[in-house]
Amino acid sequence: MFSIRPPAPLPGLQACIDGKTKPPGSLGQLERLARQIGQVRQTLTPRLGEPQLLIFAGDHGAARAGVSAYPQDVTWQMVENFLAGGAAINVFSRHNNLRLQVIDAGVAHDFGVRPGLVDAKIAFGTQNYLERPAMTAAECQLAIERGAAIVRQLAERGVQVVGFGEMGIGNTAAASLLTQHFTTTPLAECVGRGTGLDDAGLARKKDLLARAAARANLPAHAEPLRVLAEFGGFEIAMLCGALLAGAEAGLLLLIDGFIVTAAVLVAIALAPAVRDYCVFCHRSAEPGHLAQLRALDAEPLLDLGLRLGEGTGVALAWPLVRAAAAFLDEMASFASAGVSERL
Image 1 (cartoon, rainbow, N blue to C red):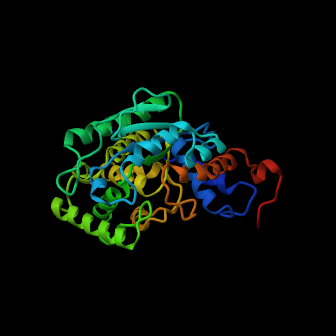
Image 2: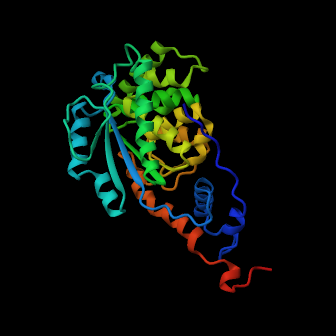
Image 3: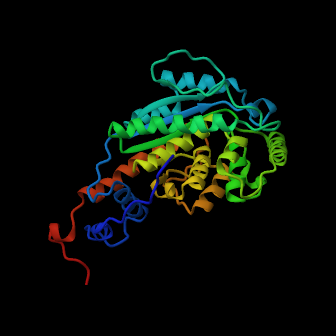
């Protein structure tokens, strides 16, 4: 279904970076980012254009069991807030000239036809994974295909950079279960407060997720899509398909926090080369995100204590991505500027 290879070696890329008018390595993480951008886009003069930010929204059956501090209705209410332009991600996207698109992957609400909303709904939320798999295999596959189709259309229009965000009450719980499986980190270390659980709520969440893991009783070698179908949400499955299609098309993929990185784990389990296309934008305050980043050997661009989701980390990190591409494209070399290099 997907043919994903690591980016081909780009001759002269490291020499180009080292030859800029600066001491080698003095731009730190921006130099590593510039090298990744040049490699992914296969050019020494990257011009990324305007990126597309996608927010995938979906509901989780387990949310009604108490894994979140907020009621499930907040999912559709926040989608309405996105469409009205009033959420944090709207503010940050406007400030940084990011195009924003909201996708209904499986919200438990009928929005009708709405400007700015892509109707890719699989169902009105997943099943409760405390009792049965969250998705059927067919639903999971369909979600992946729909996510992939959205990104393929963007690539055909010439988009070079796609950022990923999400919305779904209960999706930190689903991400915790996926993280535990794909990183082999103890489940308790993958579970955080999500939207703001108190100590009693956090203890309940950990107990519920331990019960879900015991019910599924998945072997370590379980097929990645089976794991995704057991615990994931429609928004996470669509994110997975979108990531796979983006890597296949050679796009730069801007990764938000805990939930989006859970989708990255699934995508990498299916196609390891996806990792090469991912820029990890921030370190979430969710403890499970640390386990994810450790497993992926990823150093995010920002560490601001964020735990909002929505793609907010992507929007805030975008100026750094632009800066890395710009210095590779525009900064003079020692030779072109007539500056002496070190002895």
